[in-house]
Amino acid sequence: MEYSLKKSLGQHFLKDENVCRKIVDELQHHPFERLLEVGPGAGALTRYLVKIPSTDFKAVELDHEKVVFLEQSLPPVRGKLILANFLDIDPPFNDAFTVVGNFPYNISTQILFKVLDWKEQVPVVVGMFQKEVAERAASREGNKVYGVLSVLVQVFYKVDYLFDVDSSCFTPPPKVMSGVIRLTRRDDVPKMKSEKAFFTLVKTAFNQRRKTLRNAVKPLFSADVLKDELFDKRAEALSVNDFAALTFRMN
Image 1: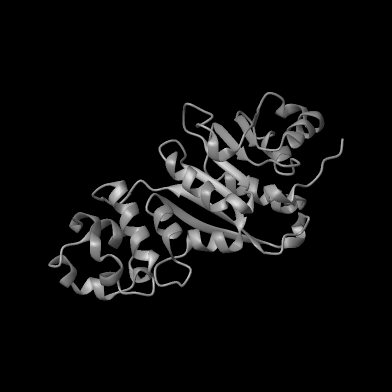
Image 2: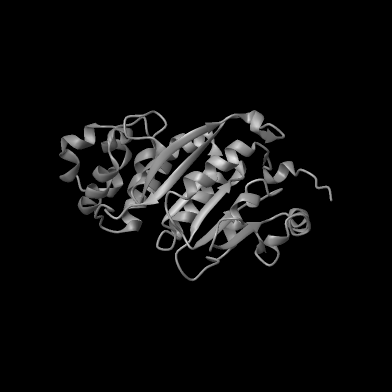
């Protein structure tokens, strides 16, 4: 059974067995009973995942042709594949589950935001992203790639950058490097006025990241609060905890 590559879906299939084994190894640092793979593609990683003992495994794949290919070439996945766009589905389990995948590059940031919607149910994610996205998710304040994605993910998850993956590990080779990161849900989420206030503040602050906070977030605070020296800084200088604390001073 042959399959074709679909550029429109951002498909780059992993072919390096060593990388597959490393991902599975990292995954098993945190025990789980249920596992969702996003975008199994031709099944390079799936072959290893279905062998993890006593695990309820499911995978979500948008490409019908790949679902047919996987069901024929990898019998253990039959009945475990969800033909859908990951961004459109409801959680596939009722209880907690871990998420893993070589994530399609064209929707990788949206995948992280989808995980945030499910954070009550998803304690751990191990995923391969375009290196630039992986670095943004993991970067700390003061770093030039630190931004909205970094803060919104890190307020709920501890992010570890695990390793780089060279483009030669894929068919076809992407034009960019990749990176594998692990998200582990925090049990010490900083207090905030509300998630809505936090998201609004962070997005507004980074929307004009070259300006001082005072100019960037002016509409959200009273003139009195804006006198604080903290507002002399730029958004990238504030830690995740700083942003959370600041929500309590918003209008």
